[in-house]
Image 1 (cartoon, rainbow, N blue to C red):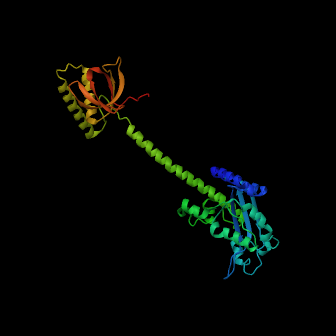
Image 2 (tube, helix red, strand yellow):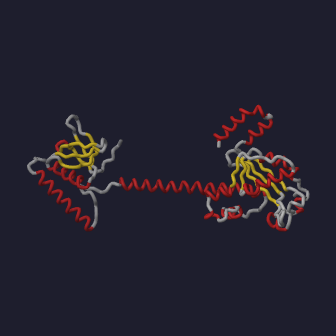
Image 3 (cartoon, helix red, strand yellow):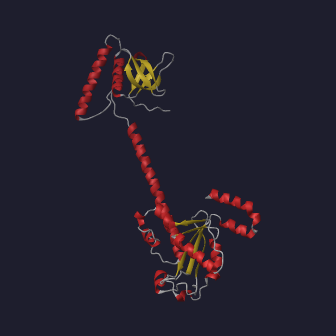
Length: 352
């Protein structure tokens, strides 16, 4: 909205030499301001009757959309022409406005300039204004031979809330229903009060939708974090024990470890390996069998000192040599047991 506001101002300045300066200044003040308005009318009760306006109320919000900048409200003496529906019992039951209340009220012609000023060039907002209120404004101005005000845009909150808030929450989404839903009380069917209720309802709907949207995203983020946590969760390991299970699973694992140990012992005979190297070979064999990643402290042929590396052992290439995938470079490399200085089975956390 801010970017559009600036753009419209620049466009207006480029043609302001065609306008009277006072008109230009008024137009500039109204750009991107939102006016919530509502009208109360008589209720036609026989064929051929037209609506006639008996009250107008409007609230102008500042450009943040949060604060009330100005307001205007007036009762209106209805048009006496017989083509317009008079104030009937049905009309009084609807909005409570009686003949006595409007007897000394101004006519629409008397307040038309004020209504024009508060509406023209602003964004119009209201509940069901496209189908009802906007038409009444146009009819009343045409009835007195004046050009009706024009909006910079229209926000009809009834279809807006149907699309976003949904009937499953607040039923028919009428203002009275929404007022009760949010604990704002009953709709009074008085123009200014209803315009203000519309603002309060819309703010609460926006809050609910905002929180729901972020709650859904927070749940997705939490699920993703939980998944990552479970994937990275370190399992208890002790001397090559890859899984700690109970019952039959534990017995099967112990039997498998014993077989791996026998295979390692058989393959190391005659290689002159130390007890530590034999233990490392057993750990590497277990990592191969379970496709696990390990950390090794290893001294390369052209290096002065040992360095820590993360690898996934793949296979043996001799009694004391093995092939492993280097996790950092994602390439397979050959390693020698006699150059190992230590093995840590996925317990080390790289400080970098």
